[in-house]
Image (cartoon, rainbow, N blue to C red; front, side, top):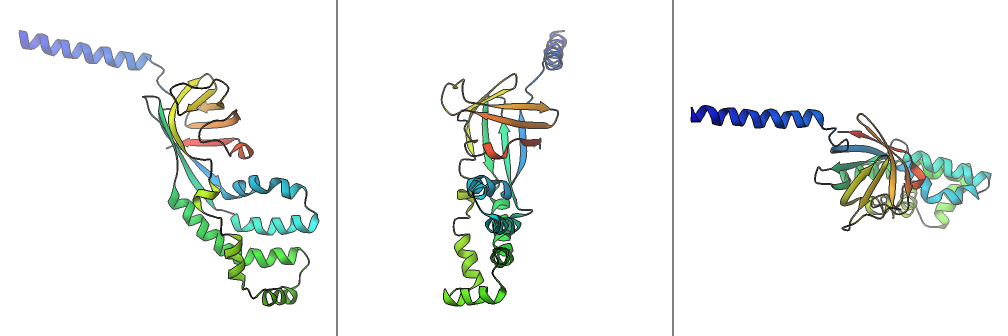
Length: 217
């Protein structure tokens, strides 16, 4: 009889726990979310002011250079835990692979950029000789700061989070700052960050590429 009572008690606990889970709305953020950050968007955010003030030939040059960044991206992962901690990380393998691809694409993009500014092949070759450089030298010069750390500066953080309505607070201290938050939309397996208000951990340099749509892993 005692054994039967213990089994019954365990079953009641299990049933009670299941009923709580069924009635609770849960944590819609819990889990991992991925976002493909395109390098074109990163570069444009850095040189947007220069493009706006450029003349037509310079704009044509930028357009040719941008082609080197086509189909190159880096995976961002946001992980939200039930203990209210979060981590925003960069997949460095995907970023490094894209940088290798960008440098290879630059071997074509740089000569085309000079052509877009009205320079013929002959004049371009003379320019290279006068500078004692090769196309590869120009690629290395142009991409010397294209490291994973430099191009994704300001992205990546860990700390704590709170979600209130459409406001996502991300912070590293013991207490959030009410003026610093992301405006978000959560629809099933999609998390969209539509606006950044104030200074938000991990999103200090992404204002120009919003909205960002993360997909649940």
